[in-house]
Image: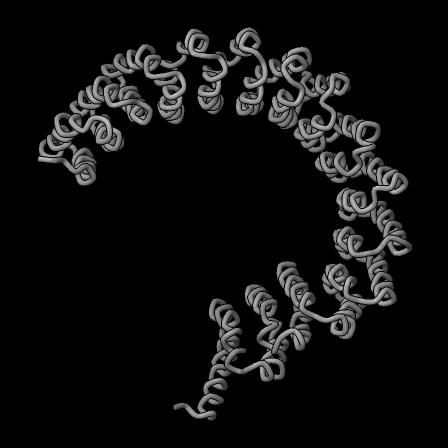
Length: 593
């Protein structure tokens, strides 16, 4: 049995090893050493951890950021290692040093650790140790320390007396007026969290004054946080007086000289409408319409992206009548930015489910048609990606008369990504148009897509056949797809023969046993004898992919047709790739003798 002395020696040895590794030149070794702090602290015990290990860590702060981040993480989980909540304030020492570090990630990890530790502290510990830490950091010469301390007010205030809370607020207000813009920015960043832990009254009013001052700060990096604070303060106090005051700040931000501040208003318009619901129609909507015509492209872009979010608050004809002039400006030729038009195209179709069929037809269809014919492919793409929103709302007649001609043009668009987007929308269009209309209007594009010069387009359309077949039925597939695939089996371009194989692979997922046996197996078997090796090994891949469906539905097709083809290719084919894939397929397809 080991003696007590042996235990002491082993713990001392562990500490010595840790110290040696922390002084090593290898960064990863130092990081790994820090990650072993729990093991070392357990070996030392709580008392020696508090008296020896923590002071040692406080002395080695001058290290690589990765080491310091790992240290902060370990200390944040170290309450049990120092003897529990009664001693958790001992962890503050090294974390305070980390709050001075220039690297923001290190400071953030240290503040996360301090926040976690603060939750374990009693009120007396908070007053004695955490408040003292706040005072030291707030008066420190380094601005990084003053930035760090801003995050500690919201976790400290609930655990102290009103008088002490007032002292802390005075420190916070001093930081709100700090000479360094980065400190003021962080004070503005946490202002909402501080407001949440304050009672109604004079303290809240003082905080509101600080908020208004920060909203008018000379630095736009500080003013940009005014909107998030408007939302936070608006949620805390719903009185008409308070909301009117805050909406005044929102209006000022809408007219701010910095486009970044105006951008934040447009980006947060949904949250603003939720918080100031009573004032949304009268105050927030006009500000939003103004931002849709902002002089900066970035502001118009984000405002256009939020159209559906704000429309949900007032899905009426009156709202559309007010909105349409702004939309017309965004789609007119003088709107030179394709980013704005693409943003509008990505959100405008989402208005259809909000306003319903009639208002969509009366107000929005013309805008849809203009955007779907836009010269920029990104705009056309954005419309196609959201086509489901429209097709699920308007009638078949509207789709046929207004949009199908444009969709058919886009199916042959010069940009392959647009053609691909139209293909991805086909199953949804089939659902809403119905079998007859879908076939008569769009089936002439099938051969165009299967013989597209871009593989991604051919592959995507071939891959969509199982969804189309599942929705429209096997009789439709037999009448409209199989004849097309059969003509492609003998096409002089081998790439299109591969398209037929990809289509057969996709159809097997939705087809029944008789369909597979009658139509798909003969196609694949025929192409295993193709003169082009690429076609033959794609035929092998198709057999491998079809196998699970054949075994379930038509096991005879495997033993009589597919397996013999694989064995023939493995034994006699001249191409090594074909042999490789044939062997791979045979290994996965058990064939009964």
